[in-house]
Image 1 (cartoon, rainbow, N blue to C red):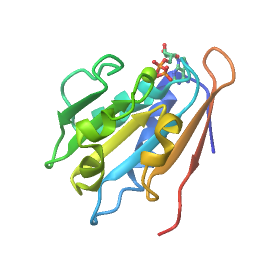
Image 2: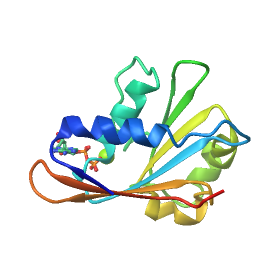
Image 3: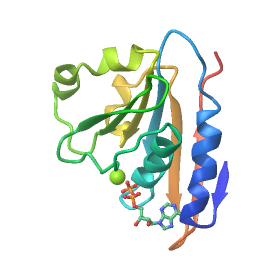
Image 4: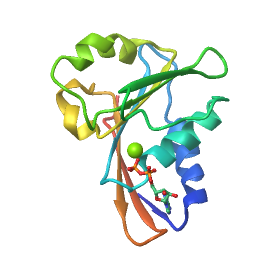
Length: 143
Ligand SMILES: Nc1ncnc2c1ncn2[C@@H]1O[C@H](COP(=O)(O)OP(=O)(O)O)[C@@H](O)[C@H]1O
Ligand SMILES: [Mg+2]
């Protein structure tokens, strides 16, 4: 659990999360939950920057999913499940993306597609405390 006092501190959370990344047979999956304005996209932007994504990360609400090229062959995948419809994930080839060991997949509103999130995903819940303060709770299954 993290107590975040201001937006810039989300970078520390991003760094900590990326340390959980294992080299293995599947990608890293971060399942983000929290209300509108909690800071999901803000956290994804910090994670992307650390992964070497040069281009500006924008909220993918209207295109569902964006893939950016990061450093060291990283594919940085950003999905927003807010407006996801039935069949969209299959259309996007989502389950294959999750399996790619080079992928770092961040999913906003992951609770809306819970059944599609793999057992190995790391759940990140962001709660709004005050204008600048957030509580971030991380949970994941030991492998
Ligand atoms: N500690 C904080 N962490 C994250 N965002 C913060 C924080 N304090 C203020 N903010 C602001 O809250 C908003 C979060 O928006 P956003 O990241 O788009 O949320 P979400 O994607 O969860 O809807 C941004 O305007 C950001 O500047
Ligand atoms: Mg968002």
